[in-house]
Image (cartoon, rainbow, N blue to C red; front, side):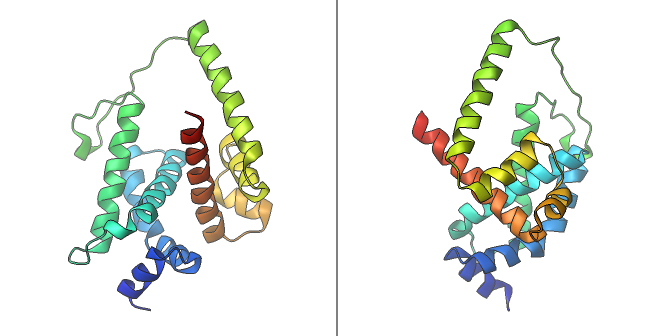
Length: 179
């Protein structure tokens, strides 16, 4: 199937086409992200986040531009956002030279907010369909790698990736409803 046809099918939310698109570009995107963040777990998370954005914004893609370049620009912007949120200095970003800025131990207020956030997330997980809540539990609470989840669940890697993207999307929608 030609890439353009695959993109058009994925735009109509056809799961098989979306999975094929993700699989087609997964390794390139993950490798690019890893070159920026130098951490395997963060690279996997940011790759999932990138493809979540790609699938959400697929209707904005202009066929006059190279699709892989478009995806990598989304990956690049996702990494910049991640680094900013995690207090990384972005100077010399293109040469991968950044430093952690770490605070001392969290304050009692920060610990209280963290506990409230964990409780909120747990309530939201309970509202998710079981197939999604299990994957979120394994990935984010048990901190398992994607391959470990594949081994634990018997699902294909593509299915795990796409299901995690959908589960995260549902969680974000729930979060927005609760605001």
